[in-house]
Amino acid sequence: MNVVDLLRRWFINSNAINLSTIYSEYGLSYHHYITEIIRYWNKLQFIAKKTLRSLSKDSNAENISLEVYIYTTYRFFWEEAQFETIVNEINDSLRIPEKKILFKFYEKLSTFKWEIALQKKTQVDKLSIECAVPSFMIKTLLPVLDYSSIKQNIIAMDTRSRKGITYLRINNFTIPAESLSEIQSEIIEYFSRIGIKVKSDNTFPNLLLAKALDKRRIVKSDYYQKNVITFQDKASYSSILLLDPKPNELICDLCAAPGIKTSLIAQQSKGKSTIIAGDFHQKRLHKMVNFLNRSKVKNVDISQWDGIYPPLVKESFDKVLLDAPCTGSGTFTSNPELKWKQTKKFLDRNVLLQEKLLKSAFILIKPGGTLVYSTCSLYPEEGEYQIQKILNNQLKFNKEPSWLPPSYLINDSSIKGTGRFFPALHNTIGFFAAKIAKRKSE
Ligand SMILES: C[S@@+](CC[C@H](N)C(=O)[O-])C[C@H]1O[C@@H](n2cnc3c(N)ncnc32)[C@H](O)[C@@H]1O
Picture 1 (cartoon, protein in one colour):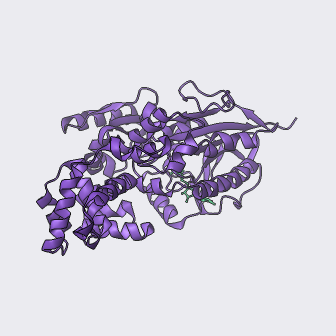
Picture 2 (tube, protein in one colour):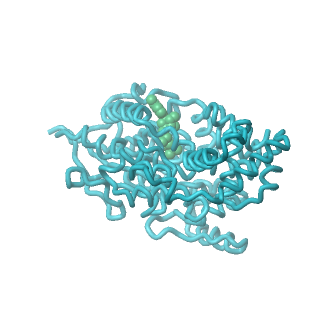
Picture 3 (spheres, rainbow, N blue to C red):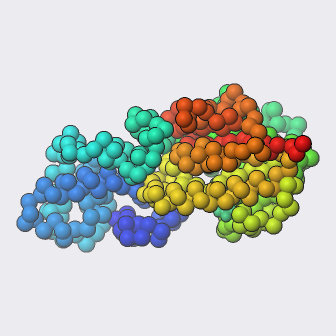
């Protein structure tokens, strides 16, 4: 199997390829090419097709499959690779006449001009190709973000794994309680000795930041292998600070797997709360059990359930976290394949599921209790609009903490208790969070 065969499989049936396993199954360079080519899929296709059209008609260009042209385009445009190198990498049964055609294509690529190619496109289509996202995504974001902000956020997501920051959280339960204050400086010093710059986050205790490029080296360290540190984005961390879990509380985590936030709930409540956590997906739950065991988290009871009808007692929880399934439109850094799932149908399906889960989450909370709702999405449909729909006199909005960045303005005003993190502004995933309290019955 070569890179082009993998691309072909993805092109024919995107579900046949799991991007997260390509690294372990095929190695680092395949992983890099596949993820980056998928990230820029429509843009590469646009350049390749335009270039092909300008090749002379009798060149038999159709004897070569589109994936080969797309791969060649990526290696030429993004990395200035030599033709011979590309042909060796493709390692295909390209015969001499086909190699000649591909060479003509390769040469033609250098004449490609964006100003000319995009001449007749609308502003939305231009941005869609330039930023390599479906035009649906741009149209959906335009009521809340201008063109330039959309562009900046997409670029920030696309470049974050090369130029951005990654966050690490210290797992308190994996170290003796008395050494907690020392461990942070110990970790920073250790990484500094091996040439990796790690520093403390200014806002949140227990959170460290490092260059995303150093991720692979961090994974190899003993601290990571022994679960003393875990990757957790600052935005995701913030949702648990909003929840503010305390010892002796009964807390439900309705969509919990793989348990990154559950373990932080346990940590913030010093292991003294009771956490009832569940998820729909068995595989993810297995991962969660494994992760919580390795993190030495003990106060969690894990079940498999449909969060729309969880087998739990109504109005019994002090706090409920609904970290809802969503389009993932704020997570393209690590999930570039999600770009090409962004359609109206996909968004509508997620919105409907979130509505049902929100309703069920709300029923579980005691009067006076708290709900935190979050999604890793940039769309207001999965954030502000969802909260707007459930506004009624049963709810009370808490004042948001000063560190929570403002959410979108809806009809010129912001919804109390809600906030948003943006890749371009906060160096995080795109994330929405809301904290709502259920009124006590009079
Ligand atoms: C954003 S992820 C949760 C991430 C998790 N909170 C964490 O921090 O590790 C959303 C989860 O919702 C789960 N899910 C989707 N539909 C569900 C349903 N009907 N009931 C329960 N869980 C569901 C998915 O399996 C997925 O694990």
